[in-house]
Structure formats: structure tokens, C-alpha cells
Length: 81
Image 1: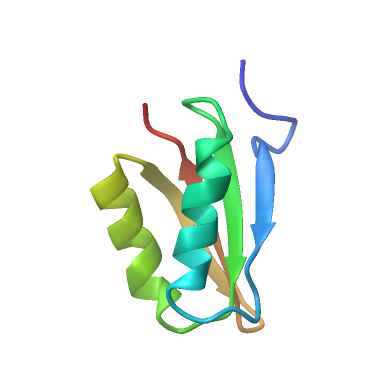
Image 2 (image 1 turned 180 degrees about the horizontal axis):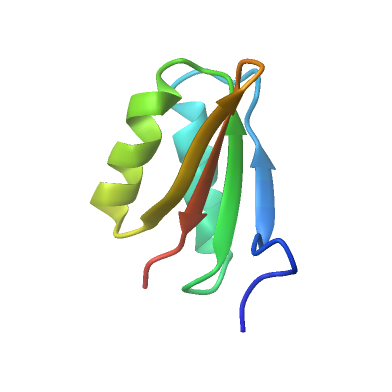
């Protein structure tokens, strides 16, 4: 079984980074994870709202959840594979 009690295997804090860096760093981090693992990505770049779902669809990953609180977006991505 993958994941901790929270279901998140790793977290990438991409706050302060602008497009395309949040997606590029997420791609690199996902490469190190096993298929089925869940990566949480935190970002504050307005473009991430479009970029992250597109990245998941193109890369064969599943966007499990997406939220925004206090200007920081959180994305839960399950690695495809």
C-alpha cells in the first residue's frame, strides 16, 4: 500500500516559482516516485491552475484534488505508470 496516513507520499513546495517551474519540478519529483504514489504540489503561480491539470492529462497522471487557500494552491497528483 502506498502513502502515509494522509495518503501523500511526497510534497513539493513550488511557492514563489513562476511558470513553467512548478510543473518542471513536479515532473522531476514524480520521476523519483513509484507508480501510484501521490505527490502534493504547493504553488502560488496563477498559471498553475491551468498548467498542472494539463501536465497531468498529458503525462498520464491523475489529478486527485485541487484546492486554494490563502493564495496557495494545493494539487494532489497520483503518478501514472
